[in-house]
Amino acid sequence: MKPKSRQLIKKAKESYQAATILAQQGFYDFAGSRAYYTLFYIAEAFLWEQGSTFSSHAAVIAAFGRDLVRTGIVPIEFHRILINAQNKRTKADYEVDDELKLRASDVDILLGQNRQFIEFADNNL
Image 1 (cartoon, rainbow, N blue to C red):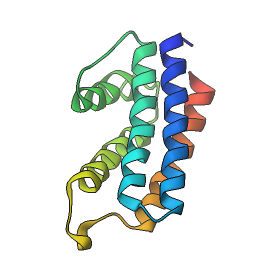
Image 2: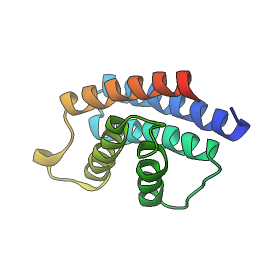
Image 3: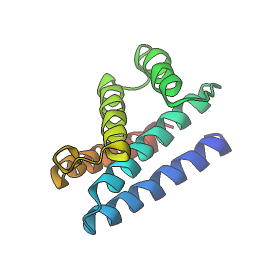
């Protein structure tokens, strides 16, 4: 694994730990945002291994699907998880209406997906 990819995976694991702590304290929007970044950093690491870098979240997510999922390097469910997490992160970061904020159940799902993606990265990078 390339050094930059290793650093991104380390950052992803730290982001997961932060998301877990925030969720335990009831800060679900902030936990959801950190959970998204866990997935995003892993996606960046996979792309970095392919020699690709991008300057926007949309570009990373698109390239992840195009270059890694379509080629069979990464299972399609991880692309779907990443897209869903980005939508939750946007909601968490910008929504102020209490009815639309993330809930514990939303974050529990994201954290479970984080664990799956971390394990996949540990075994495949």
